[in-house]
Length: 222
Image (cartoon, rainbow, N blue to C red; front, side):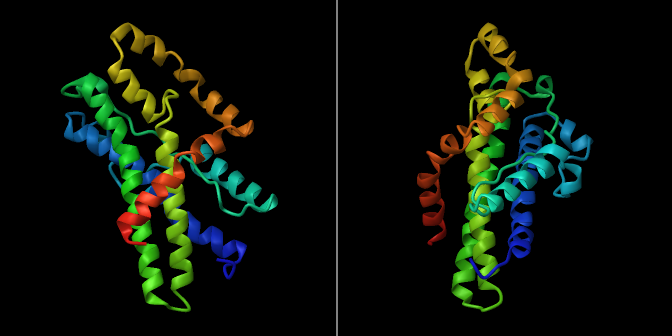
């Protein structure tokens, strides 16, 4: 991987990052549509065009700062995450709102897992090609794609409202408890940033990653 310079590494990493956050949101909207809510479709959010999903902070600022800090402190592109504009879901339109809320929520992390397998297959193809021009970028892109998607998967399964994990938990709680739990949502971003700044978030996400990476590479035959 050392053959790629900084500009090349960032250029190669952009595609997996954009696809990871875009398909994550599209998966939420697609699942909602299947379960009765067509809000995302009517607002044109069921598209792979990343411009429709870009959030200035989550898609550009946070990943950019993580990439920059990685190279300043010598860790490269090891830890990157971001997010897109949330796809709007009208829970009242779902056929079974309490159950379907969990299904819509889990669709995003599931999409990230599937994409991680896809990027593992790209890496495998890069190895098989043994091309002096294509193999190195494909291996790097595949590795970045696996890492970004698994990080986003684990991140979104954290039980911090409004992350997807909190939606799953809310669907299992009795009404009054679910309402009290949802009141944390306005502070969710602050909690997440506090975990990031204090250095807690990285180890927290890294704990399940080795097992997930082993599973993904095993499915791809790496």
